[in-house]
Image (tube, rainbow, N blue to C red; front, side, top):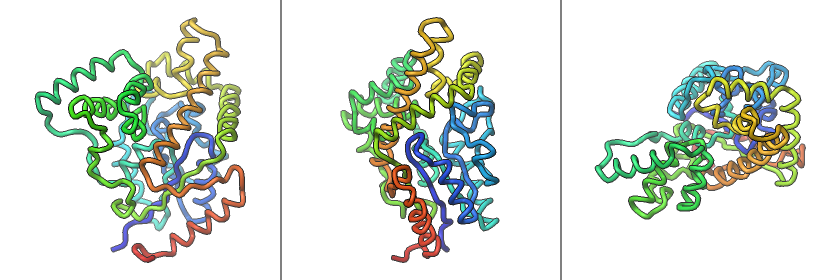
Amino acid sequence: MDKQKVLVIVGPTAVGKTALGVRLSQAFNGEVISGDSLQVYKQLDIGTAKATTEEMQGVPHHLIDIKEPTDTYSAHEFKRQATECINELALQNKLPIIVGGTGLYIQSLLYDFHLGSSELSDDEKKSRKKWEEFAENLSNEELWQELEKRDKKGADTIHPNNRKRVIRALEVFDLTGKSISEQQQLDLMDLSKSSFDVKLIGLTTDRDVLYNRINQRVDIMMDEGLLDEAKLVYELNCPQASQGIGYKEFFPYFEGKCSLEKSVEEVKQHSRQYAKRQLTWFRNRMPVEWWDIVSDETNVSKLAEDVSKWLDKKEGMA
């Protein structure tokens, strides 16, 4: 029996994933499943770059606005809910289109591997306690930077927001002297190992162009009310959203420790750095087919043609 076809669109922020997801949904009778770790939260619309009603153009979007801002959300929960969505869409003969930049979530969905660890040895327990205590007063970004210093190869394969995985990587390096990337049992570059018949599209563009788009997007977000949204996150002390780029940078401003201009510049800088990390992560971890639809819009029709051929092809055929 053929596996269910799933189209996935990944890439850095501000590169056109949302618009492409809508366009391909319209072309191929699809619906969008968000693969973003923060778009699950209600009220957090601007900083998470959720598609507006107008941008959705009538295409249903799933796994958006399903959690309160103070709730937590995990890759495990995403995997379960996204799989349910895929199965429901399959029954309706709809094409599931995953759109998002949270690499761990995408990876957890496409491959059948367990998130978390089994029983720990005494040495592992000591190491875990050591690194959890070390991490207590560090942000996700600072903790990830510590891993990057010790195990750059491992850091490039882990999202900074995946705090547990970063701590685990520090443990592995501490205990074995080896990168966690060497501990991977699963060949994640082989899509035939996936539970689905996957076409994995990545969007990218010239770095200067991308960075300018990110800067412009932040300015637009400020005009749309990003500051009020960040204030909400700050006042509610949302555990996961508080770590999100576009929110945490304003906390020093709310506390009178820096100017609004400095906070806005930090949002832009952190967003650019995150985009760079997203590209590195996907290039190192998954067999992505890269497309630039920003610099050359004719690539959209070429990409659509490519998707059409994939849909027509039976799994396993050359």
